[in-house]
Image (tube, rainbow, N blue to C red; front, side, top):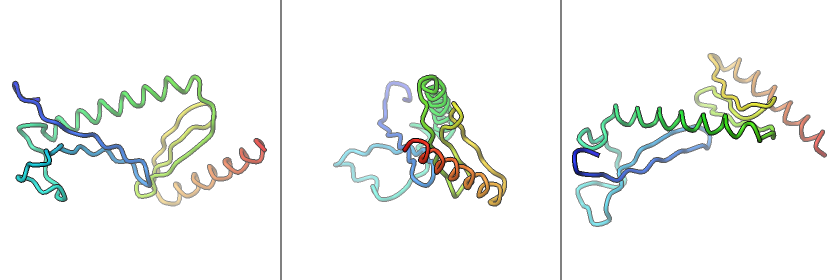
Length: 126
């Protein structure tokens, strides 16, 4: 919000094969100034890149705090991968985790260990 004006934005959180936070400006249906299929650099007079970075950092911190809070009552093993960035995250051994790896080899070894843990967890629960 700049001065007495407000601007509508949407936060998208994508958790498929990669984690991504994306900020999108909401455009009125009758607004012809912008092509809805195009990407634009941040509108510095509305929501600057520095403000977006600060917001995402704050949001991520709140999300981490939330998971730390629910970890007290959560107890089910799972993991997900962010293959493009060599990151694994999930819940194991009584805590949520997020690990990034410096090499594909380290990442693959950790991934295989989690897969093995997943298989043994499935056999125990049957």
